[in-house]
Image (cartoon, one colour):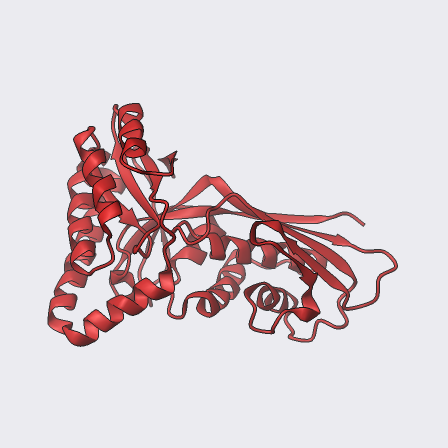
Length: 313
């Protein structure tokens, strides 16, 4: 019996993080150079329900029966199978690998869930449409992050740049002109749950101030959408800088991220901002012709790594 394999890419949020949780739009794009992969292989002669899972990146090797029902990996398997009772599932071994750094705002958890759901469903003879995979991965994201927006699972499942707003149909972006982004790892793990909770506490303490910031971020996202679909991508630079100012005022930037942004801009980046939840994680910088110089400046400023990616439709 053949192995069943599925993968899902990483993602970056270009504009709109945090405000998207409060009803504003956001833009995000896949990072195809990074991916999570799940491989499901039948174990001939094994007993029903004998499911072993290996995830070397998190140093996990265990029978699924030993994982709590709410463990994201076990929950993903149950979602793919359509039942919490996995005792009648044919014996199999599952290998999960990923090149997406964890706790970095690059969609690692959503990508792992999406890849695992696809591969396990295929092993069971279930062909799930993209929207169902996205919906199931979103439920796993709730376990991981508490109150996710839904943007991560949408991007990694459909593998396309998206314009996302809660309660509205997902819109895939037609990129008029590709543009290059450098993704710089600050070296500080971020926590989406912690960042979302921190913003919520700030919002509860001062709703008027936060609503003003959310509205401005929403306006920036709307303008960025117009630029991406019909304008000159160099015009995204000032929008990224303004978005970063709003995120700093929301309290989710850090001195390290601010230093990376300043260094990128001094080296010739058109714009720079954190991407994802913040409180660590990654900075993204928009490049024109000075990408090598900007990359070097980011590394000298403390970035642990810099990944170039091109945003295209």
